[in-house]
Image (cartoon, rainbow, N blue to C red):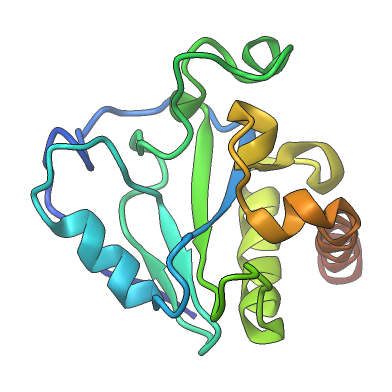
Length: 179
């Protein structure tokens, strides 16, 4: 399911800084309609002097690409100012305690294709299980961390985020409750 295509270390995208804990998943959308997971990965691989990266990218074709190791810092939710209370939850540098997931979309509305959502749910369930995260409180939008309208669709329609979180929670209960 996950294609590992790690980018090279570069101070603006993959600084090689080790993270020691995961407190949340931060979900993003690419803001580039029509981009694929491979496009996003290749964009982060370019040597551009701008802090930007994420751990995973998912597209509507069911492609899930791991861009960098989960326990390395990615530059996906840093800001000069954060939403009230978020540094209490995530620490002073949320990039050090979160995993960033970019979701690709096909048009300017930011609407996520059901295949992209399905694979985002599978990845989120896997990561929630692995890091003992609670889907309804520890799957966040970029918006929840910084106030940026990302993923746009879930900012405009927050009930869709709630449905996503509940589906991930159900996946965890259905698949792993007996383990």
